[in-house]
Length: 129
Image 1 (cartoon, rainbow, N blue to C red):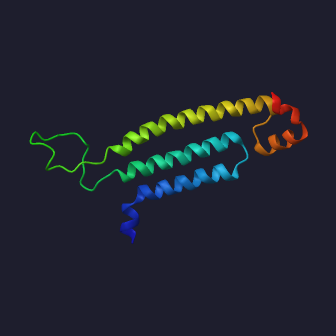
Image 2 (cartoon, rainbow, N blue to C red; image 1 turned 120 degrees about the horizontal axis):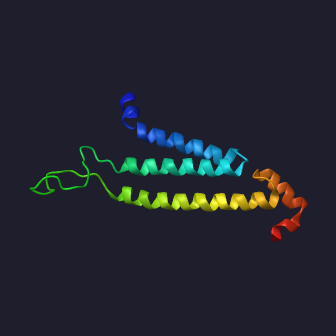
Image 3 (cartoon, one colour; image 1 turned 45 degrees about the horizontal axis):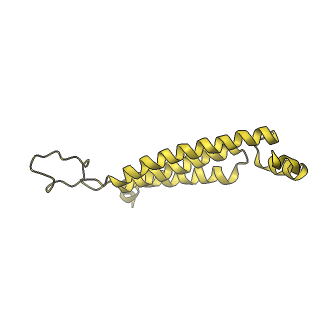
C-alpha cells in the first residue's frame, strides 16, 4: 500500500493542489484571491495531464538510435502540447479576470464580492457605467 502511494506521489500532489485551489475559489470573498485559486486549480490540472503522459521505461519522443524507433519506448508527447496551449489560455483568462476586477473596483470601490452585491442592491444605477 505504501509503495502504491509513493509511486503515485505526483497524482497526490495534483489532488492536493486541486483541493487548495477549489477551496480558495469557494471560500474566499476577495476576487483577487479567487483568481489566484483558479490559477492553482489550473496548475493542478496541468500537473495531472503531464503525469499521465509518462510511460514506464519511456524516453523523450526523439529518435536517439540510428537503427530507428522500433526498439525504444517513448513517452506520449500529446499532453505536453495540450498543456502549452492551456497555459496560454490560462494567462489570458487571468489577464481578463484581473481587468474585470479593476473595472469592478472603479465602479464599486471594493473587490469583495459580498460588498459588491450589497452596493449593487443599494445603488442600481452603477450597472449602467
